[in-house]
Amino acid sequence: FYTYWTHIARYFPEERELIIKQVRDLTNYIVDNNYQLIDWDGERTRWGNWSPESLNGDPGWYLEHGLNAVQILSFLKVAHHITGDAKFKEHFDKLILEHDYLNNALLAKKIFPDENNHSDNQLGFVAWYPWLQLERDPRVRDGILKAVRRHYRILERDKSSFFFLAAATIDPDY
Image (tube, rainbow, N blue to C red):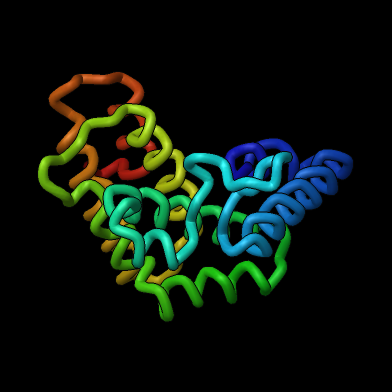
C-alpha cells in the first residue's frame, strides 16, 4: 500500500480515494478484531495474528512476536499516513507503550538459533521499509536501522539479490 500510494495513487483522484478506503477498511477490520485477521469462516487465519495476548502471552507465538510486531506497527503507521485517521496512530502508540511492541520489533531475528525462513524474511523487509520511511523519531529510526542490519547479516550469506536490494533500499548506507 505504501509504495503504491507514494508513487501512483496519491496523484490520481480515483486511485487515491480507492486506496484510502481500502487501507481504512482493512486496518479497521484488523484493529476491531483485536489485531487479528478473521477469515470468511469466522476464524482467525493461521498467520494473521498480531494480538498482544498472543504475541506477548502465548509461548506458542514466541518466535513470531518480533516479525508480527514489525508488521502491525508498519500497517498502522502506513494506515495513519494514507488515511490521516488519528485512530491508527493511537493504536500504534498503544502497542508500543502498553504492550512493548517496539521492543518486540527491535528484537526480531535475535533469537537462537536464528531461523532463516525466507517467507518470513520477505514479510519482515516489506514491513520494515514503509515504517522506516515514515518514522520521524530519530531514536526509533536508529533502532529500526540496527534491527534491519542485524536481520540482513543473517541473510547476506545466502547472496540473495532480493534481500540485497531490499536491505539497500531500506538502508542505503549499509
